[in-house]
Image 1 (spheres, rainbow, N blue to C red):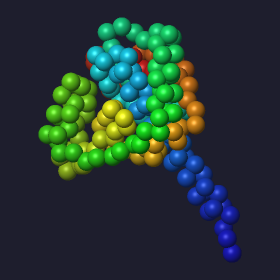
Image 2 (cartoon, helix red, strand yellow):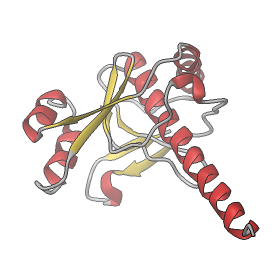
Image 3 (cartoon, rainbow, N blue to C red):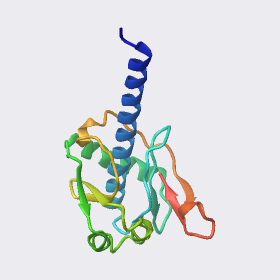
Length: 166
């Protein structure tokens, strides 16, 4: 006899996992778009959340609502290009060399215990330090909308730099 409660729970868990993959992948696509528009931006972190996703950036000027429109446009373009998300494991030295221009990523790398595997995910020309998981390709993301811009202290510490959160 089937336990419908277990089946429902398994379905809900799979739905939650997919939702997290979609949101996490959308955050990476957003970071890619930001770097295309603002190549000097320094990336913080970009996790999925219960209600969506965000990414923190250190930029010289605060983002504007017009910037969000441009970022969304580039995101839509990337989503339509069916770009695969590719995972790769790196040594600590390889990761530091890859993110030499990204001080917040270097700080994260230094904080990861030596015994842990370092991995990156790439799509198109964009690469981020990341454990994943992600969707198979960018076109798996059915929809996205950037809602707001806020300030966020790096690592939630008011003595650290104020980053811009989208």
